[in-house]
Length: 108
Image (cartoon, rainbow, N blue to C red; front, side, top):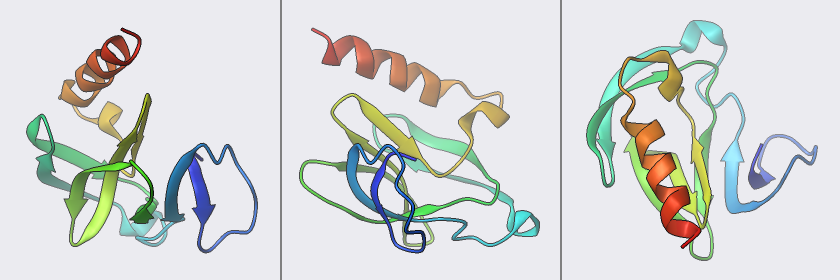
């Protein structure tokens, strides 16, 4: 929803992050999966992907925060955070904590 461009969808959404995403890149709901991967600034965390997009490329000052199987799955630009996975579907709250700290620091 935040992507400036979606490579396989011509519709426009918020378009507020300078990145290109691919919708449903991992396939249909049957392609859903769980994994663990490094998240910059946090460490290894559990990730749940359900009909997930991935980020094909980032532009300008957008930071890549996590990569799974050579695909960008988390990025940050200013006070915006985009993830391809669902951090709310695990008991690990580290991504939520990261977001709260990120917003506090951005507003100072």
